[in-house]
Image 1 (cartoon, protein in one colour):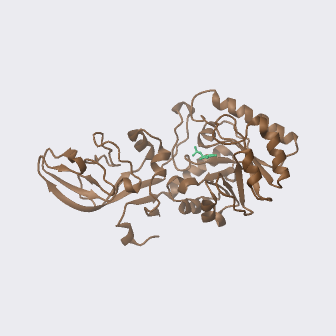
Image 2 (tube, rainbow, N blue to C red; image 1 turned 90 degrees about the vertical axis):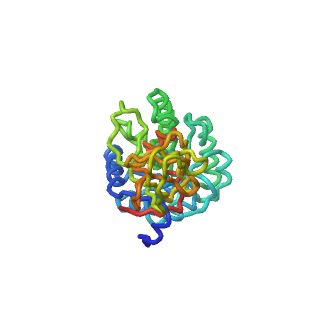
Image 3 (cartoon, rainbow, N blue to C red; image 1 turned 60 degrees about the vertical axis):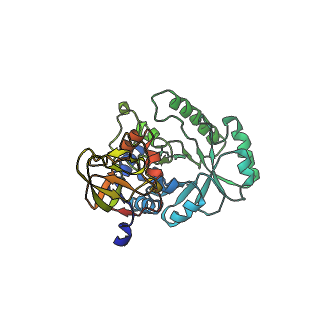
Length: 343
Ligand SMILES: *Cc1c(COP(=O)(O)O)cnc(C)c1O
């Protein structure tokens, strides 16, 4: 826990442990077991705070994690049995495995490193083409790497279309090929949050779950998604208060004009903290429905309130709808310097 005086200098993020564990439990029911969950903690755990979320996941019994690079892996090393590293420089550790994104990468990785072959079944961002899998297997052997996994990533698991099934079919075929070639003990995984939420039968070794664990789903309602609960809330604290007369205006550009006598306060959150600046003509409403008055500054916003502490956002999905983006971007943008506390 942090010292209270620090909390009052800055915005604050609270992490709801029960909600996080609720979400993990819902996912475990879908996946068949807690042991099958690989919690995706990349990018500071989607802005939730990688160390806090890693501890909470580990407390719940999660054994596998996925991160962006070895720096993130180093922060959570003691807490998991395996850590899949999606990119960056290779630093060897018995718990680490690296996603293979290209043939060139295979020859650049030090001998003995554990790798998971990522096959490009249609996303066309990263991974080996299905036709190049044999070549990749050859290079992996020649370079003395240890193949521990086969994976792919869906480009449209959250869309109501046949594309998901088309990618899934390709992956199934590859899985069969590798089994036939004698790679029986490698772990096989393709599912992200949207894929596991919509799946009826899950027969892979792990699910790489990110956004659903943090409480959000973008799946159309027809998939009958399970109830997920947002984990993060964003608070701001009062810096000062003042009285405004009709006609007085607030902030850069004076975009908000008081139409009546108002008591307003300045709060310590701004785009410097990763909060979206947005358009002051379409003000964001706080969790309690208060509009942000005028433009968002780098470190400050104004509200008609005198509360010491105000919950600005309790649902990133709603905020994403307001700002025309996705919940991932809203939470991931939140500055790592904002204190995070578990509630
Ligand atoms: C980020 C990521 C995930 C998690 O995706 P969610 O939609 O957040 O569940 C899974 N797999 C890979 C390869 C990723 O990069």
